[in-house]
Image 1 (cartoon, one colour):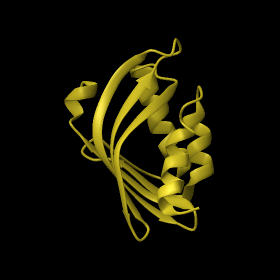
Image 2: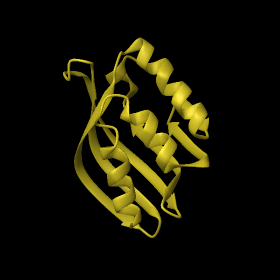
Image 3: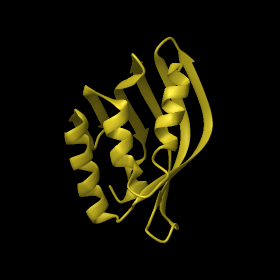
Image 4: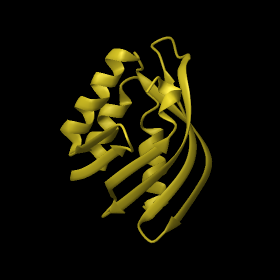
Length: 124
């Protein structure tokens, strides 16, 4: 699987309820750095899941639907322009966030993931 396909598959895996937990466990390297620039910065799947669980307590999302506006890769680095729709248990969008993401892929796994967005979109 190419780095672009890895990122696309990872984001698609977030669509089922609580699929984000499985996606992180399946696609992150043990030392993956996940950062919402200016808000959170974690290392490893367990820490990343813990941060997202805390976020889900404040904004009760259970899944994510991504509208991919653009995707480009150079080597193992994949850049995305997306609209992420955080969905509640009823499948309705709680919030939609337009953002840019950078993924570094190594051996079919995500070694680093940085998202850049206006945190005011989620009350930050």
